[in-house]
Length: 114
Length: 116
Image (cartoon, rainbow over all chains, first blue to last red; front, side):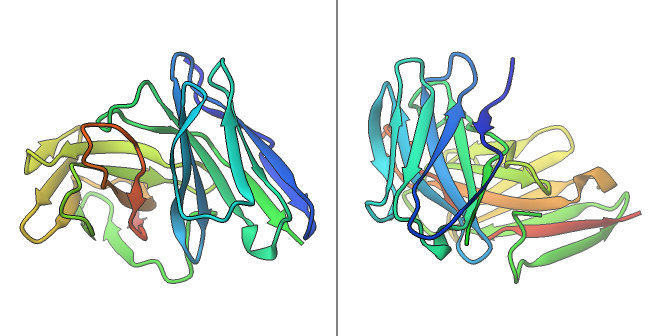
């Protein structure tokens, strides 16, 4: 089975721009979560989607949004980029919504904001 | 690598020795805990998990111990190999809603450096 894939792998943007990141979960997985990883804050939960519905959201401003499509693929969008948004954005998928399901992470998208 | 913070605790061990990585978690209601390994340039990789109704679980060369009294988790790696060099994160699921959500809270990570 192919793993979680994320595109693009690297991205450079300037302040004020917006960006859309994409995640394709493992085939058959219906739950997708997004995390932000920075040296200062570590790994922080952004949001989780299941069956095209957002199930939970972390403590991030409204500039961070996401969605999930009927094929379980997910996108996240960051508007009005700030320098502090530079981070590795990780997507993780799991089969269902049980908290005892292992999450599988993708390689991440490295976003640099100049 | 992308996962290494400025002040990550570091554990340096000799190849062949056993490694013990510790983690303190925050929420006494957390019911599920996971250890992840992250190598440079990659996303976190699942190592082993444990539910709150257990205090020990063993995998291949790894053992996780859970002490709920002091909210402490440890990962033991037997016969550590150079390929084990990575950043290790513990994660807890604080949402004790019978599996309603999967919002994980990650620890800050420990860098394991294996000396050949």
